[in-house]
Amino acid sequence: MCRWAVTITANAKDGFKIHTRRWVVERTFGWFVRYRRLMVDYEYHTETTEAVIQAAMIHRMLRRLHPNP
Image (cartoon, rainbow, N blue to C red; front, side, top):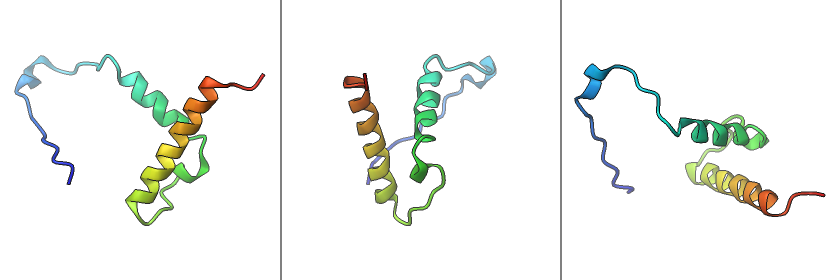
């Protein structure tokens, strides 16, 4: 459906490397903790979970555009 491809590189000999933008992903997942429906996977269908994630991100963006005084 999504047609994703996974590539495995042979650079494992370099050892562990920290991803430079990983904190962005971790911060986003931290924002999801504020939404109760995203704390635990209550939903039966993945489409419902995706919709709740989209609603949470829309709410986050709207709050950023127009914060409370």
